[in-house]
Structures are given as C-alpha cells and as structure tokens.
Length: 114
Length: 118
Image (cartoon, rainbow over all chains, first blue to last red; front, side, top):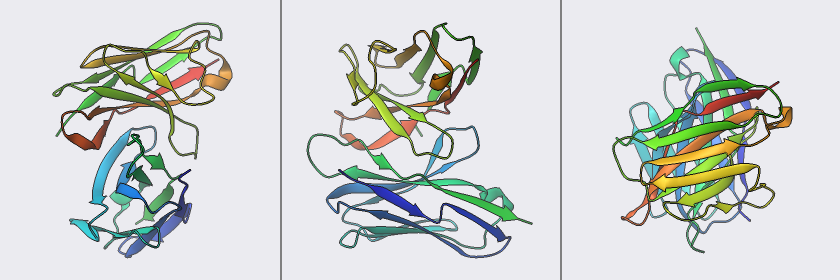
C-alpha cells in the first residue's frame, strides 16, 4: 500500500525566502506525482504534475522535482510571498493495478508573513 | 481548463437529517467521478468512485447505505449523507476524470463542501 509523507507539516517564514517542501512515497512504481495547493476551506488547485519519466516541472516561481528511485519529490518556491500561504499537498498515482487513484499526503501548511 | 463545481459550498444541518451534495463537471464529460472526505489537518481520503450509469465502488470502511452516490449523467454526481451525525462533519471534495477518453492523468477537483452536523 502506497504511503505518502510530507515534511514539514507546518512552516512559517518571512516574505522573500526560498522554500523547499518535501514529499516521500514508499512505492516507487508510480504513474505520476502531482502537487496541489489548498486554501483554507477550499478545494484543490493543481500546481504541477510530473510524469514518472520526468525529473522536474516548472511553473513561474514553482519548481517540482522527482526522484522516483528514491521515492522523493520536492517543491521549491522561490521568493515566497504572503499570497503563497496555503496548504500544499502531494499526491502520487500508481503505475499499474487498474487503479489510477492518487494517494495524498497530509500536506504542509505554509504561512508566509510580511 | 476543466471546471468542476460543487453545491452547496457549506451546509449546516441537524443530526438525523439527510444532506445532498452535487458535483458537476461544467465544460467536459466526466466518465468517472470521485468523492473524498477530508478531516482537519488530514489528507484526502477516497470514499468512493462512481462511473456514469453504474453503481459506485466504495472504499473499505465507507458505509454505502449511509453515503449514497448517484452518477446519473456524464456531468453530474451526487453524494447524499443519510441520517447525518456530528461525526459526519467534514469537508467533502469531489473530482472528475476524463479517464477512458485518454485522460488518465488528470482529476479535476471541485471546491469542496463543508458539512457541519449539529
């Protein structure tokens, strides 16, 4: 059974810092890995999706890397802003077995203060 | 991009009543819809998977008689929490997928529904 762990669980930083959020998974047989953002009381917004054959994806100030063999992904946020404050979730989809349903981590709660 | 809506966004009800939550794919046809539940500071837990026109597949530990799922069309799925109790209070999120049309990659998530049972 796939297990997804996100570290740290919570993070509070001053504006402008570069951040690294970590996601680890136990089963490296994945189809893809996705990073989501969730604002309080809201649904999920997809940030970046990395296919299993890819090493990284970039969107604006966000960069996500994937090391499938070691079961790790990182989300790098450059020059953080207060508007980045949210919970960031990592989700891993399996490669086979007929089920493509992702397994989610518990998220990293980020606060960026001015 | 694909848009999924949920209605209502927030509902408060008395214990023992039933609550229906709608999930709609607004600009695409979803062959499969998913219902998740999220408790505070917890990850999303899949409750059930529903395919249009067929019975939903429930995850282990989820009571199918309590959480009724109907997927009557390619754009609408409903979750009915029957005889709701305070422990059912949670954030319910649906997602829709175009799986089966080559879109295995992507689930599009709705904005969620906050259910509070008094």
